[in-house]
Image (cartoon, rainbow, N blue to C red):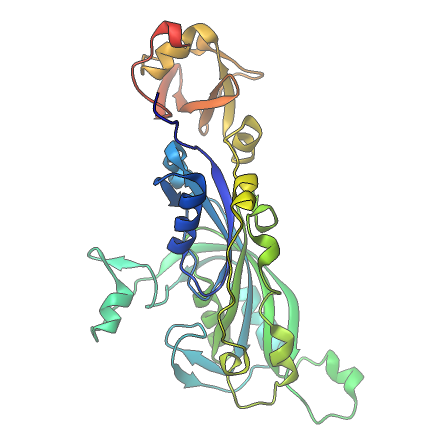
Length: 357
């Protein structure tokens, strides 16, 4: 019999300096499969959580892509690069904002907003990436998109040095100049944190770009459960630059640019790999139902579904998607409209004899 293909959800900690597709290669090699997909890439300079899928679970990509995301972002005011990250060329320099304007900008950009993605991004027009057009010298126009910023929490603020003798009063001063900050942002799919930082700076009358970016959660999946999490360096190397806040160098000039080798042990990837269990399905906001033994073959062969095929603690509702399980394994996803059921995904679809059930 042919070897069965591994079917897992793999939370993976991508390090800074490699592409998301390099991470795919390592997981493919470890699991011994060619079929591994991602549910949203990270920029090369960024690190953090990638949710990867193997085998037939790659069919879950659109479901996981829709999840909200959480990020930590470190940025500095005063300069803006064309890429809005440390890998670009400085195109604007503006004064540092004051604390009160910074806080006001954050409040204004929390909620449902219109956001223009960066020109250097994966956004496509006519099937081609905008970044490819920019590199050829072509002019591009990026339309805004509607996104939701659910929350912006300030983890740390770096202040510019001030020649003020009353430091205690200055600490809480609304007019103290802000050098940069670390924020925790929870947002909807399609949000660009680089654009959010750009817009915060513009609302303050300043300029900024992202120095470090780390994705910490995708829906119910967290960075702490990811293969390779323990190997990630401390976030952002913020302290090193903050100490030299009066330097004329950019943060990327101050940072150690040497690449840090990062290879996740095969055993760590295997331990992080998750089958689609009932608990995980519920965490993904699926309803769950268990298929009765005598109807397994009919389900796998795509026969019209009837409600009496399932055992369920509660009647299945018309809202959302139901994950169907048989003998502890997910057989497929269905939806319900009134008395009618509709197949969305069937794993291992194909002719199944009753004796195979």
